[in-house]
Image (cartoon, rainbow, N blue to C red; front, side):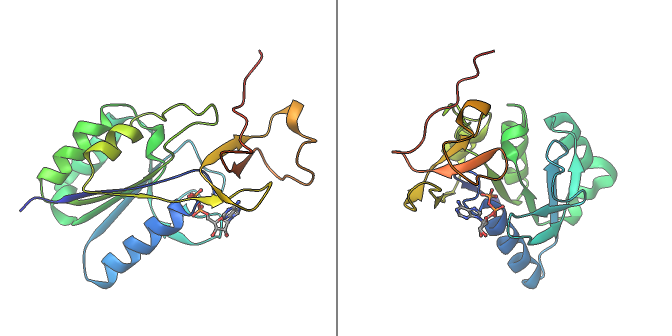
Length: 189
Ligand code: ADP
């Protein structure tokens, strides 16, 4: 049988990791065999797990974000045949070759669930995500809460030096913003 591709997208803080973790946990309850990956770029929260900003976690293998590395990890020791559901978080950091790899997994009968940003802080399409959305059986686009006005936020605002005073008390480098309050970050260097 053929599998299925699900993409969970939206800006930072929209709950993509939470939703991915929720789906993977439910798959496990249904006795599905789950494998989960994230790129080694984002090790802020957890080294061996997908972690959400609300501190929910799910064990994950951390891989260098090349599709070649991911493919090698999936197919080594025939690991792939012992897995029903494959989750990948932060899929925007993988190269374009992740697209045929994901479709190969779907054609092998796997349920593939991806989490990733659809746009960058400059509001450009982010890596392979828009293409994967186009190929998916189901796309879930989540919104966050705008840190300026509280309305639904679809953008990720980068807080640069020059903007540091715009939002008082802003912790960290990024925050969610609605269409009205989003100002694409322009790197002047
Ligand atoms: P994502 O993977 O999309 O970055 P996470 O699943 O890691 O999102 O985190 C979602 C959680 O982040 C929310 O449940 C909430 O606790 C927290 N959070 C922090 N800032 C915001 C915000 N501006 N809007 C919505 N949730 C936020």
